[in-house]
Length: 90
Image (cartoon, rainbow, N blue to C red; front, side, top):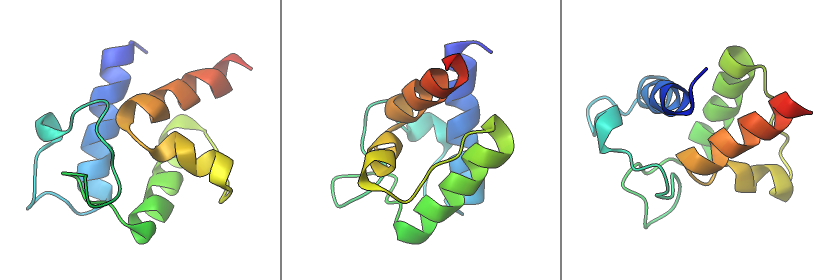
């Protein structure tokens, strides 16, 4: 799957699965902006992180552990895509 297609699919899944349809559209999410925290336009929280981990497992076959190392992969769309690619290549 092409990189841009993965990013688009990921953004769309975040909007739907994390119940953000009323707040923003997938086009509003920048690839490198933080998905979590006060500086985030997306505004995901810890429950959304669990949902995002389920989405990654279900749609991409990627397992995200609860460790700090794994959580850094969920920082932005770009970091998630990099993680998907690194797992798929190994």
